[in-house]
Length: 200
Image (cartoon, rainbow, N blue to C red; front, top):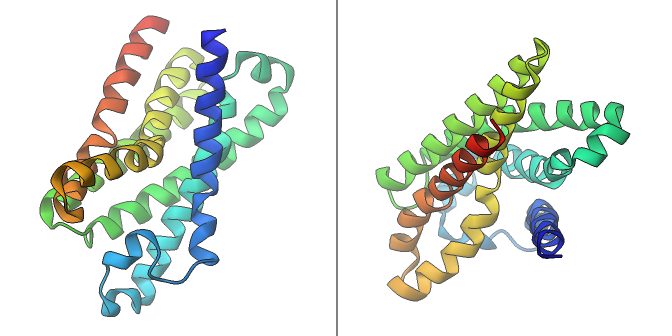
């Protein structure tokens, strides 16, 4: 029963935050993180391309990726599993690259930038390696790297959980954002490491 509740909450959060980027198209430009950006940056075509590539494809990866952890789903719908996997990999690789680029302009300076750049590198690497492993039929290794990959992907969820709490504690957005640039993904990777060791 507890496992079903946790799985249901996990799925809900992945779907809800996966759809979150849609709000950027129905609410004015001062919504969310964009409210902390300068007019010059918001007018930059390259930055905008990177930003929307990151949130849209990252959202898609989060939205579809959680289904891949259901053993019943994988066994019953193997072809669908593979299609979703391919879409996930392409989405992540492009979103991670875009995320690395826009991290240079992250609010809070180099501390924030380094945090998000590190996340982008880990997300890209773990996903790319997961793809390489499955290409060579190394299924166990593929599954391990996918756990790390989705743990990095899930940072989109944990960021939105931690950020309002940190703002409440610090009283300001910028110091909270510097912390969450690391807190949103480091614990996720540590938990992924525990899970990987359990399934080995």
